[in-house]
Image (cartoon, rainbow, N blue to C red; front, top):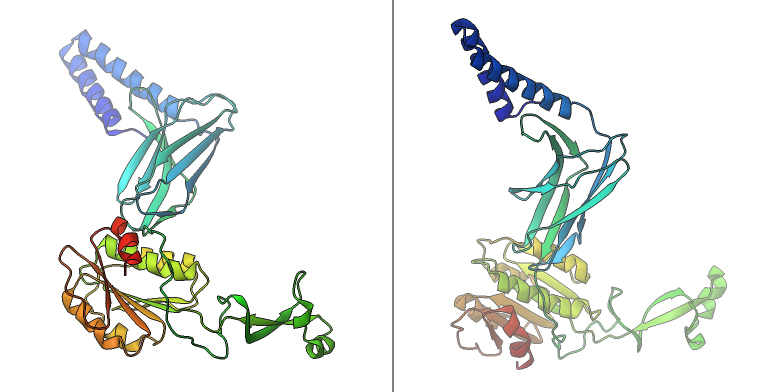
Length: 360
């Protein structure tokens, strides 16, 4: 197909030819003939349909905010002739990225990589990818779409933190999930024997009934649980990062961690670290406060409220009777005084959190 420049060249050549023929001047006719030949050559250049194998991969597909992510474009020429003048256009979010592909001899493979933006948390659509072949003068081009769009998930940044202690034992019959560590005196369930299990824990009656060697699994009945409540009014990235860091400290250690916002729960206590990061990657500013989240949160363990609002910090003190420990992570330059029974952690950036968390 002709580009706007190609259409302009064609129209100008026709007008020059008509004017030269009508006025009897030879020079406009020569110029018009040159223009028409250029358009014809451009169409002939781009007319053959190239046999290309095109693959674009996003790596990694999930990345922390600010970390590197790239798209890798691989183009293989399966045709009988070499190709040049190829250009790829890939839409990344609301912008379009243009990549020049080096010349492709017969059977050649070219790989080009280009960075993806990771400065904004959330889902970033990548694609569709189109490959454009144009003539050297830009008069004609052939456009073809390849592959399916992809999605880059930009997650919150995190820093390593110790697990907040709950201060009291819970779940006297053992936790209901698989996050608990084995090896204590509380019976949790029966499971099949695996090499290395203590034979003293074999449950012979169940083994005889099922025909499979079964062992008793014991768990720690004093697992610290963590409930993270994120205030999404006037949401800032350091607040999301702090909530993710606290929740991951428990989840990666194998302990229950639940994340809630004023708009509702994000994850249950059984969520793993990957789920927590994925859900927090999509958090957007809200209008509801944390009063309802604090009221409906399951008591026990440690409550961690992440907010930048002084009034919400004071509200956390009302929940101290339902939890063994209440910690408020205040994100802002002017933190309020610590309410009675609440441990206040002050931070303005994520880099300050580990030291402030350790000094609580």
